[in-house]
Image (cartoon, rainbow, N blue to C red; front, side, top):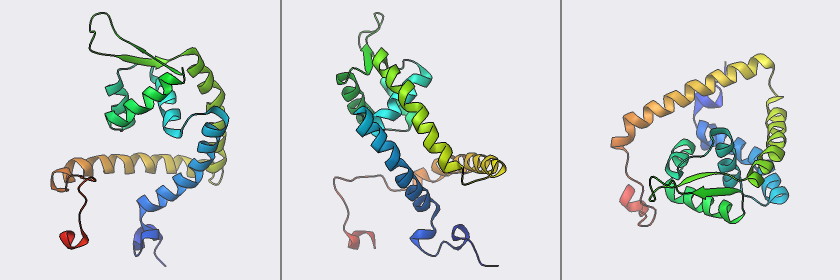
Length: 174
């Protein structure tokens, strides 16, 4: 019996992360068009709106952590959403150095309007699978996520630190 791409791993087209990235890119284009064309927000901004809707008001650092994003990028997205009046930033009276961000009424309206459309796209993509395949897929995704998180902890100390500004020449790597 021939091996599946995930077993073969002979080319980049066989690699799990590459294949998931391609799926996300194709499916994500529809969400990007909805967000940008219909609501004037980016996909990253949409993710922040959804997180704040589902989790309530949060400190920006906690939001970044929940989203698995760096604080600087999260801060830029929040600044944009505040300018668009979709997010409100408040400073607690007990700690003037901290901040809390939450959805404005307009932010809630965007979520209430956009979420059903995004849910429909997700449902249409998943319709390629039977109900039992969707359940097995969800269970497999959970196991893959747990495995990836364990590997990150295990391998992190041995992996080189990212330094995109400096870059590396191919001869430095080989």
